[in-house]
Length: 357
Image 1 (cartoon, rainbow, N blue to C red):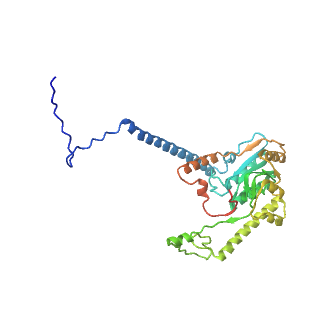
Image 2 (cartoon, helix red, strand yellow):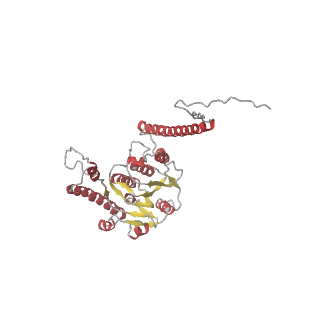
Image 3 (cartoon, rainbow, N blue to C red):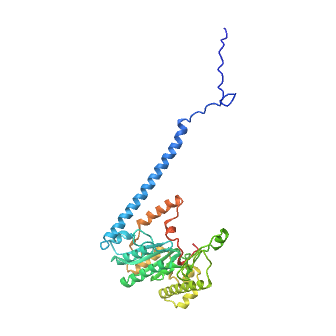
């Protein structure tokens, strides 16, 4: 067989000189292109669903807020406090969980001392509610917010003569205990953290940091105490004395509330009120609580005080807006934002609060 001479095909020459040109890059196949496209599609779907959920939430809130402003006289508080219509005599259970602060009370969906005070008032006004159980799990909070709830309890007791029972969960310290002092009976678990009777005011100083970076603050004020507590300068001895006066006065108010509620001499309360914490069993020994028990024991106590007997029917305060805002809080945290509670309560306050939690 004769050999055929096949002419050689010259290799392509590079524009920059001799030698073969680099092989052309192959275009990505359909499988490689599909993965980024699918990822972008899922991200868009997730973002759209999140946006729709937020819009729906705020639409509901705006509608309810409008109802409150347009018909304040016809508004049934039970629809928005979580207390439904009870079919028979019962004990109302109102939870007080977490730090206690004030929020914008003009909006019924806000969580805070105003809303808790409204729930107490609504529960006490119901004929079928014979006693009220406050389920407290709180380290306390700002002085004004704590006193608002305390006042709501005292007012409800004076107007309706209905008994109040406080039940302590994991923690009911400082302002949490202040609220309970207004109740007729206090029941704590043996291991509950309670006490911490006292007041605290914290101030942050940026003076050292400003000196390091070469910054200073210029303030024009109407009086020498107008910027008291400013983080931009050191506190003067005179200012410390003034602030200590605020602390001492707020402390006396706390001691008075405990003395009246526990029917103890003020001097005896002061011996217990140096800020220390107690277990539930220790608190029982020093007469800060009446009994040791759990939630069922507290319900039985409220039932007997309301003449319903043990294991009474229960009207629970279940607020759907708490669940809604817990969801929004978790979404904000997922995307790196601060929680609503942190955003609302960022400013310094005079507080009845235990900071061990």
